[in-house]
Length: 555
Image (cartoon, rainbow, N blue to C red; front, side, top):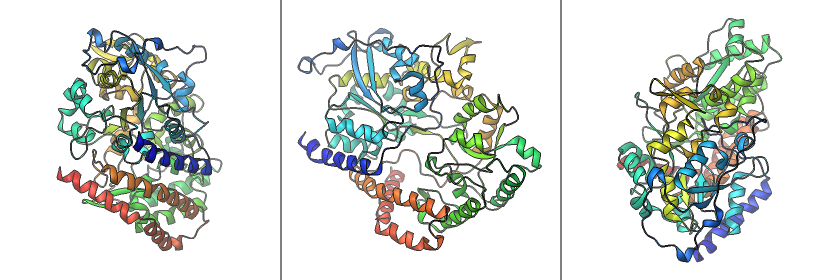
């Protein structure tokens, strides 16, 4: 705990000062495909079944193997574990806490392990600030679910948190008790590469595994879409090149002056659909094994010149921060949207305007025949994982519970929900019930956070519209060769240094991007901007990425 006190608390105090100085903003998950919806008002929220008085004292706990009992039972004496996790605004409106999800309740009954979630309430505090406050208070939960926040942003990641005595090293417990994880994940060479570090240490235990498609790549879930009715009215085809997009947007502005030709949000990186036309992206990537940082490349300046022009002409929305994807689609003739959010778009918009169907457009290129290298790809593992803290009195049961999510029984239930309610059996196959077509019902039965594996049959059924399946084909035809491979890992020291460097650079890049696009800063200052990035040690960050990638390829 001396190490914890000396290093961790200093870091958290610094983070809290920064949080207060910069203000609080809602920080909800936006992972594509995450079920988040609103519960019907006529249906009362279900309360979790918990047995808080059955927890044993620490001194009475013996580190002996706990045999898995029949029907998935992990312990015959029910225990309660506290869990920290972020939650989306829609999920919070539906159930307030994950233990109120119907499938999760059944999972708790089966295993004898009950969960009590502690979520940052959306809209009241940032996710990372809530996590920092929890850790700084010393009142640690038993398990931390990390989805790009919390441990994902901790200096050194999982191994850094182990070093600072925030988390336990789960290696021995995984080896001894994680029977399903070893059988279904570590036995597969691709999956193993995705969840382990360069030295073979498991660093993403509890992550959701997204299998590769037969094509050898993952499905694409996000990209540009256009209202087909407006396309038909102006008599133009779906655009493929930047010039065709420009012509389309000008035509939309002339013919539909009350509708923004294109709306998007820099916050969800939707501009990457267009930066890719200039062979760069907003972030790090690799070309033939050499790591590059897009915002300092000449192609990024070309992209910003184009966006400055389009913004000035009123062709694209000037709102670049905190624009919800659904709102993009509601007020725009075209947008960049995730296919999961499209379900909500259909539910909200089509009943009022049946003609407002969206159709996918390919990722734009500068001229016909060019190859797009940054196609969206959903494959590998989602989320950093689930981690047991040093405060947990039941580390064995905690690991066994996380492991059980990879079992066929749990995976089926967490993909499909409850038979007779969220799905039925037809001709020997699971088929979702009508209620699951309503986005407001889905998150009451299915949570990505509890899925060990993505079930492809279920995944196809939760995207029921023809235009979604067409989008898979259109976006899936692009290249992905400039993107990083799945499964790379930085060392603890690299991760800590990299996090410190990029915390300031990310803010600087976002502010400069907006200023240049909106004309508040001259694009002619790009060279000075790059020089400033170098002063802020972007070249060191590139070195860290290069070393990380080199080790990955040498495995």
